Each structure stands twice: as C-alpha cells, then as structure tokens.
Length: 324
Ligand SMILES: [Fe+2]
Image 1 (cartoon, rainbow, N blue to C red):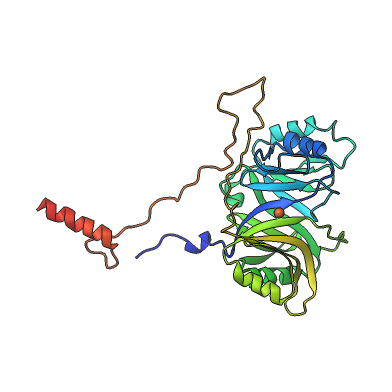
Image 2 (image 1 turned 180 degrees about the horizontal axis):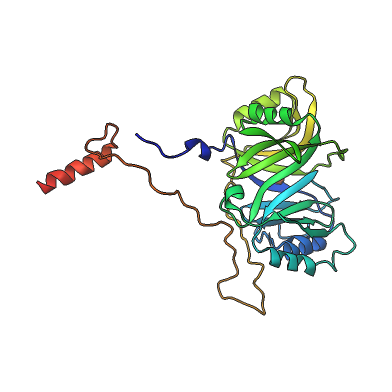
C-alpha cells in the first residue's frame, strides 16, 4: 500500500521526555520574583507548598528548587513563551527587587536572554512549531558548554548506553552533540574552548522506555550514583566508551515510564490575568498549540485490497449483503 507518511519522523528513541531540571536556591522570595513574576511561570500548587522547596511549572516541564546554596547549569536553558512584549514588561517589573543579584535580561533577534538571581541562563523564544513543536510554553532544550573534542563521544555514550537518537551538528557556534530527549526536545552539548566551572550538583530528569538495559550498562561501567527507588536511578558522568575518560558531568535522574509521576498534569496560570484587569475563566494557560495528525492517508477498497482490515472487510460485506 502506498505510504505518504514519514514514519521515522515520529520516533523518539529510548528517552521519551525531559521533564524537570533541579537547582537549589538560597532565597525563595527572590526566586519567586524572577521565576513567577518575571518569567511568568507557575508555582506548583500541590507539591512542596512550603519554604524548603518549590516546584515551578513551565508547560509540561518543571524546575525544582529545593532550598540550599545556589546551583547553576553550565550552559543555558531554552524556554518557549508567547508574547515577547509581555515578557519584557514583566522582567522590567522585577528589576528593582532583583537589583543586588545576578539578574539581567536582554533582547536579541531570536530570543530574550534572562539570567536568574544566581546565574542560571535562559533563552526565551517565541513559539515556533517547526523548531519546538506544538507548544507555547515549555522547555524544548538544555544546552551545555563542553570541552573541545568531546561532542562525538558524548553522542556515542547516549546512543549506546541510553538508546537515544543522536546527531552531531557543526555550525558557526561550534560542534555540538544533539540528543533527542522527547518530542521536539533535545540536550545539546556544544564544544567550547573556554574554561568550564566545576560541576556543582544540579540535575535533570528524563523518562526512558527501556529502563533495565541502560541501567545494566551503566552498572557495568560503574557509573550508577544512586539506586533511588523502584522507578528511578541516577548517574553523573558521561564517559568515552573506549577509554573510560569522563567527557562531561551532569547528574541524570533516570525514571521509568511506570513512575507514578509520569505525565502528571501540571497547573499553568495565565500571567496576564490580574485582579484589576480580569477575564472570567482566563486564569489558566493552555501550554500546547493545536496539534493534528494531518490529512488521512489512502485506504484501499476493503472488498478488494489485499491487506484489507478484517473488521472493515466484514462490515463492508455485511452492508453489501443487507443491500441485496
Ligand atoms: Fe529531580
């Protein structure tokens, strides 16, 4: 049968979703002003409602922020958020309260860069279906700066050990390993000749379909750092599979898709909603754009097609018999 569709294009590889990032923060007030007021994200209302931790929802993604000395990602986090003007207005609005911190932001052609009070960097893009898929709010990628000569080995590690779909891209910004970690989601490891700061213990979390085999491979490489529970383990080092040399370090929280929190619905608010400018029913934000499976493909005549679906064929024969 004729197939007009690109079936490979829907493949995810073994890593099926990047869900949360985790950085410790020393001050929940400053974090609220930046992440909630400035960036327009939403504090998770159900889990960790106290001062020891806060979860911040960004579409289907989250950043977890336990209280502690600040942790900083070694690169930047890609964010999709609609309405650049409203974003800039919100960021302008928190300048005063964040004046004595590392907070800053700048408008570029392709994105708005914003830095949290402790130095985590974000590139905020407008929705772009081609690049980021059908979302208007979320984390489509995390980009790490990695030592020169490591991109290829990093891609190989994710492919061979985690079963991820990977590729190497080289452009004006340098050589980078792209690791598919969900629909329109990537980890990007971009080579740099600049000196890197030491890893401080922040982490990212992904879901994997094959949970057991990667664990076995990581265990043989002696890379498992935590056997968390039935549905989770952790590792930190990404190594060269020939030499064992550590290429880059970032803590990975690996969860099975049977984890109780998998696909948990996340509350997102509409940051434009205020008590003085109120729309009834407008409190929530739908973080996805309309998605479609596209036009239907050809379906052969069930009475004559060689591979006719049995039920469709029976139905057609029954209708034919009734008509006689
Ligand atoms: Fe986590």
